[in-house]
Image (tube, rainbow, N blue to C red; front, top):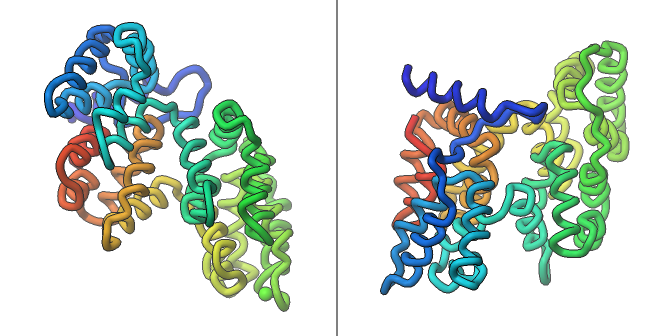
Length: 338
Ligand SMILES: [Ca+2]
């Protein structure tokens, strides 16, 4: 019970200022002293063989705002940039986690998007995960930060790296035209959209993808949840089955990701984590990305969905699938066992 009340207290603290409620596992530490932390990190970096433990314990137990203050003080004290110093001191997966933590969630997502489109070939899986699972508010901020960091429009990079209907869908999502949720339930519009989705797909030969894209990228999430429910009164297949029958490849994956996120985004991310850990050669990048990007957003909810779905906690599963400093860092970010 003590844990529940602690959690509710944290929720109240983070649920302020008209922002979307968050369900973080990483919270600001009390009695925060950025220059003390910066000095401890500098000592840890200079220690022979590097004191990784201290670096991990500090950076995984501060909020992003606090880490930014530490980075600021570090630069003043050590006369060099913290990210550069960490690159020299750490390596591999734990380095990726620590560098990720120096970025805000939007900066981190922007960086992941950029690297998914870098060089030859595109990492469509990452592109789909981020673009299809982030809210409009998150995407607006990601676009802003993307331009700041890379001096290019996210839209332009996405358009240059994808093609066909897949490109059209991603572009519509990146343009963030989604309605805000309304207090008024428009039953006529729900019925019209459900019928339009059916007529554009299962009812006809081929698929009118443009209609699917416009409905799924412009309507609010609560509206779409009701549309997919209504959809079942027109179509013999539910929306996800219809997507599997009508389209293939990256377009199919994107539509499925969207529908899964409309239904329960944290369950989608929990399943991504679970699959990434099951897959041979453990997809560390996926595990790192989800935990780092969501630890101050909704990782607490992802944790409960994970436990509900797998019967085993995220904490225990990570303990079994990772090791060393990387494991320590992830377990700190996950925050506890369920
Ligand atoms: Ca069809």
